[in-house]
Length: 335
Image (cartoon, rainbow, N blue to C red; front, side):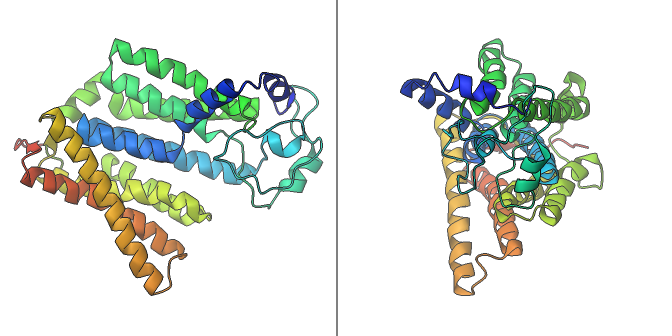
């Protein structure tokens, strides 16, 4: 499972259009895509279901990254000169071994290979984040909306995204299987908690959520704090800060009543675009202030920046939509 034989064989088919196709498929697993997609779901389709997807991505991302940091295993293109790296989203500034892969399918990476990369600053491979998030996110999307036509999109992506990682030289088969395991566990956990039909029906019919230290609050607050404390690389702080900020905004809005899915296509598009504008404007203003007082690279600042930007999306943008009558609020009592 840590061999590079499959990658080398697949990369014989190096047609330019095939490479571009799988680069496009793999782009569907990067944070930039999920950020825009989630905003479209939250403000254009369903605020409540979009929030579930956000929580699921947050939990899956934090667990996957923590495991990556724990195992510290390299990627195929790092351990074999024969494997080409065709994914521009992965850091290439690492030393590459001539041949440090496993020789048999069920064999682990050689000790000299793992020792060589241990404690080096590399984009760790195992488990595959693209894979864990693919099965969790796209699987949950299908379960939440339950549209037959949607299955023709989510099912192929659950297999194509992981395959693209192997073809592009970024992951071993073991990485993919590990990602499937993590993503499957996270999807199953959320299904048992909220995505199953009975729990989802209650959640969707509850328009107000009183703040309490319950499972809902735990799901929102704990993973980002764990992420901040344990993830040393600042580039991962967006995965902790954004969900925490959005979650806090959600809790505040839910006190008086969540928005219901109404409005014309124009209003829905306007809500999405205004949310993006508020997020970008918040980041720009905070970065200007941080640069002036020389704290731009501070971990705490980066974490707080994404918390505030996401909080403004959930709370400020939603209040703006109420004021402009782009959204309506049910006044029923909730849990």
